[in-house]
Amino acid sequence: MSRATLIVAGGTGTRFGGSIPKQFQLLRGRPLLSWAVEAFHVSDPEMPIVVVLPEPHIDLWRTLCIGHGFHVPHAVVAGGTERFHSVKAGLGTVQGDPVLAVHDGVRPLPSAELIARCFTQAEDQGSAIPVMPVTFSVREVDTDGSRSLDRARLRNVQTPQCFRASILREAFALPYDPAFTDEATLVERTGRRVHLVEGEERNIKVTTPLDMRVANLILEAGS
Amino acid sequence: MSRATLIVAGGTGTRFGGSIPKQFQLLRGRPLLSWAVEAFHVSDPEMPIVVVLPEPHIDLWRTLCIGHGFHVPHAVVAGGTERFHSVKAGLGTVQGDPVLAVHDGVRPLPSAELIARCFTQAEDQGSAIPVMPVTFSVREVDTDGSRSLDRARLRNVQTPQCFRASILREAFALPYDPAFTDEATLVERTGRRVHLVEGEERNIKVTTPLDMRVANLILEAGS
Image 1 (cartoon, rainbow over the protein chains, first blue to last red):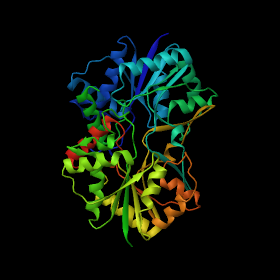
Image 2 (cartoon, rainbow over the protein chains, first blue to last red):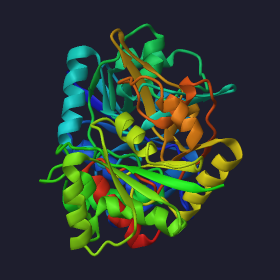
Image 3 (cartoon, rainbow over the protein chains, first blue to last red):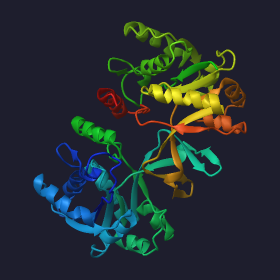
Image 4 (cartoon, each protein chain N blue to C red):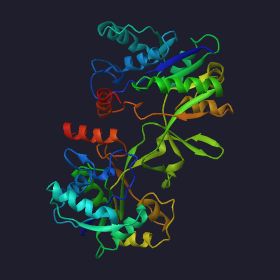
């Protein structure tokens, strides 16, 4: 069964600080986004990789790739402002029915083992979502206050979220809903179950400047 | 209104690695637990601080304090194997009706501002629980599979959890329930609401060796 990867980096915010969005800021001297692209390329050098970016970022990304000598082959597709539209745009470029990994562009450090585990399980089960235990207490707020959730039942959801492309196509044919946060949620709305696999600590999502320094720390330790 | 602090460090696990529990492992050359004790002492040098430890750890802790020249004044009380029993034991040593902060011994880096904010709000509102947004997707698993939660409504709950001592005494008079994870949950069972305040990124819970290195990184940057 063939494989393909969509790497989505739609963030335009500058909440992270700096003059460019975080996916373009440097980790060990090269753009954060390039780490994710490389991780998937290394896992399977023949696999097609599509990077989905907002249209206004495409020239910047190409310039950064040249400037940093980043030559890992990948296609670039213009996405929307929301993840839903970006994944849908990326999906439109995929031929046939490969198992497709959808990965956050700001998760630079998935291991080769994690990537292999997600693809293999999705080949077997139709889907594979990496999750980790939640190590802190969680509350849910509503208009009436807040309530504690049972932490033992919660899972921190990572990416790559892997699915047969045909399953994703069916899900992305649904109308856009602002409540959409990940592919798994959308796939479930088509009545399918998603299959959970074990995630990993090093597969962090870079959301704050501290996270960027943590990514550097993980690379330093080779852990 | 007077203030007091309970610092709870009941962990006995060695899942963290190393020959001693993580609360005794070194951050910048002194035991992790000493950082939390110091943070509360600095916030109010007159405030009574009670450290609750499992009985078998008390001598080790005293020896470590002497060995590392850690002289911040605090009482030590023997707790139970579960957080419920430890907090209850600590509470039994508190006189009068101060506002009481209950803090995780493995959260070494609450800022003075966070501690002040929690105490002040608890003085006003009866309780104060620091929370942060959740930056990743969360699923809830059950016997029937798993379902996505609305991340915008979730909060990462930190400590110190602050309450009037009388409110905590009422809550800890309830029978022990293994589902107990934090003080706020228990207080709510007495029919009270808990008041949420803004937490902070640096106030991490050290659960893994990587977390210990992140704590060191935060200290390096003074951030």
